[in-house]
Amino acid sequence: MHYYNHHIGDFQRDTASLSDADTLAYLRLLWMYYDTEQPLPNDTKKLAFRIGSNSDAVQMLLETFFTLENDVWTHRRCDAEIATYHAKSDRARNANQIRWASKMDVKSDPNKIPTNNQEPITNKKINTKPQRPDDVSELVWDDWLRHRKNLKAIVTDTVIKKIRNESSKAGLTFESALELMCARGWRGFDADWVKSKNKPSVGFDPMLRRAK
Image 1 (cartoon, rainbow, N blue to C red):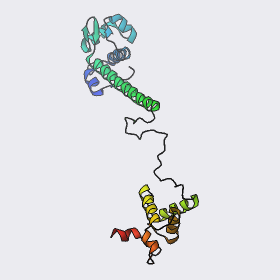
Image 2: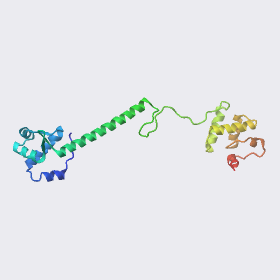
Image 3: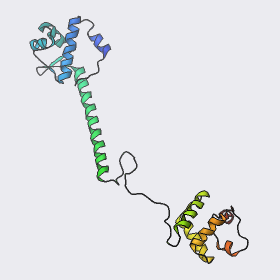
Image 4: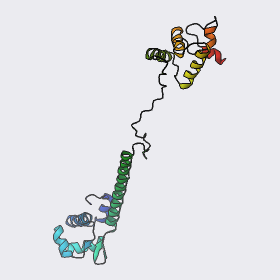
């Protein structure tokens, strides 16, 4: 590892009695420990040469701050920091693997729902607007759709079915009923309005009257 948490307060407390040269030697021993992620070998001459110190100083530092175990010098704080570093690395690696696997699953199956609550990816477009009936010209159909939009009235299969039934009762074609609705500004259509002389005026909302 090339990074570690350096606790300044703890370090100053532990090295308060050391000379500047011994403090630097101790730092270099720590850096060697973190860099190799391994305990230090039980070889004071080799260690002294590698950190630019002397054997006596190194031996004193090892005995003061390190613990000899199985012929190697271990350091409690260093071991804890190295363990924490590897735990974080493992969590990050596992998270990346899960994220990548999720993306690959979505690519292989476009209709699969992602695990991160995103909208499912699909190439299909859902068309909720009813299609133009075969017995209505495109011109009349477009005019009627604009008429419904201006009245802020929805267009559903139920609405179309009701108008078709009423137009049949009135003896009119479905297209004629739509033309009549556009011409007179009707929101709905009732066979009685065609048969009766008392027809609703332009702008009158028949649906509201029938709701009463």
